[in-house]
Image (cartoon, rainbow, N blue to C red; front, side, top):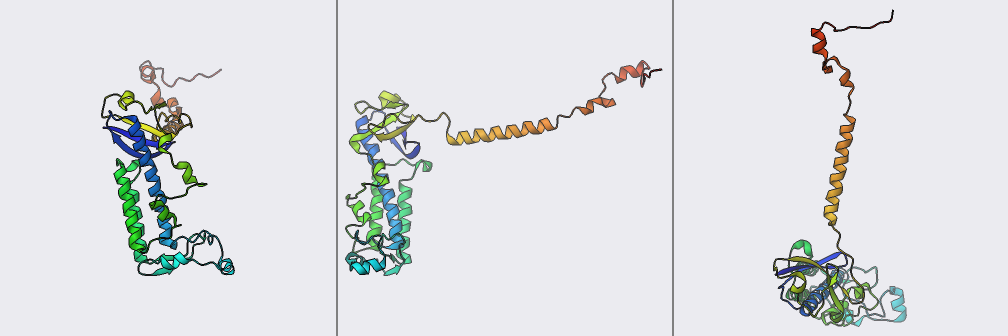
Length: 288
């Protein structure tokens, strides 16, 4: 199996493996789905951490308003009254004004946070050395969905971003997250400054060696070739600079210890024995 280290720009995303005989059309779609799936898991984890701290989302017409403004406009959070967490709620005001402040109790909060940590671990980055598959992404999504159902058996408001993510109705327009998502039809894979064309097989580029490991970059069509990988990694560069600094310190110390004044000492005179036997030791010349 060929190991693919998938990157977006200079940032590592995940590891994936595929046979060299895989059609690049299929591989590109597979990589794109895993990539987008991981983004969905990350968005859900972020929102669920906020859910655990500050409760469900406020209606769009109440977000960002002060309590006085809400009372003046006579607005009411009807879904907030229905969507009560299991075991009751604990008030914790959301300073941003996006959520209603009716947070779950400590026990239910830990259910959400523990599930978030487990989901992140499932779709972990390259450092964990795990090959990520679409099944693993779906498993992470199912675990997150299950945790929300445990804490909020009555469900979440239809406008809550967590529910919209689970129903694939999320609206990312105008957000940074929208720039990260790549459409399957527009996705491109690049390796060694070459686009891996969908009409070919993976082996057409990397050969028939199934133990090959390559770094591929995924990006949107029309963005041009991605930047080449550096000759040495950042860690190797760091170690190289550390070695250079240590070497400079060693040379500096040697230069400080390079004192040749001892050469003027009698014991350092290599002709002293010869002059001793010739009887010309300690001869001094004085002007008359």
